[in-house]
Image (cartoon, rainbow, N blue to C red; front, top):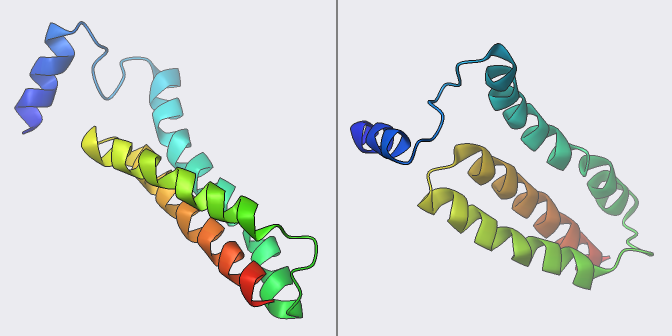
Length: 106
């Protein structure tokens, strides 16, 4: 399968992966870190809800919709084999779902 992706990059005149410039290679690596840090920043919200058993001020509808809207991104990432998108939105889906469930329970 790898040769098909390489051929697609050549025929569509796309940049090679990994990128040729150091800055773009750094950006390619940074996107994984950013994709993990974002959902990790939801952990304080999760701890507040489950630790204090209080979800006052948390709108479960919003968190449910955020979780629901992550699903098309996960499917898009899987379809296009874009692993940074898959990892990021899977983590967001888990975090959003956990907050939603906590908001419903408490």
